[in-house]
Image (cartoon, rainbow, N blue to C red; front, side, top):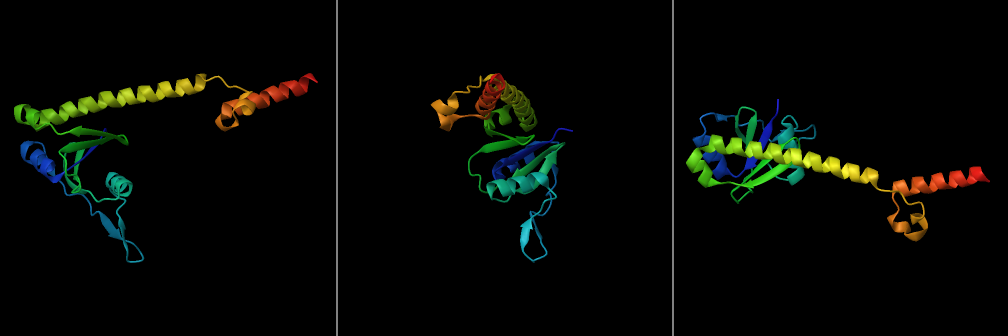
Length: 170
């Protein structure tokens, strides 16, 4: 099952909650728990909240869900932005109040999800192309002498292979 996590400010979360007929209130888990040393540490049971809290050094609060979409509030977000997290990738959008007013919040969220899936596929394609470019980069055995600071692992392998071939010839 594909899950999305949405982090936004309190105002937008309240707008989504009041406008969507599918929104279910779910305040989530406690953000922190007591550890053995009586200090409070981030709760690791909600994996996304733990990831967000440790990455951004702030606490998010669970608000609710629509199906597999979980909504969180970050009280430090002051702009009207909405951040989607899909498969550990972040997608940030300006919240479009006009579309929400005209077509509804459920349509708007569906539109954003479709946009995210397209952008995610493009990101994966770009990463694969970058891997291919790295594979096709020609190794230069002479780079060790020409520019030692820019030597790559492939250059070093080419140099070692060249040395091995020369040793076998003599």
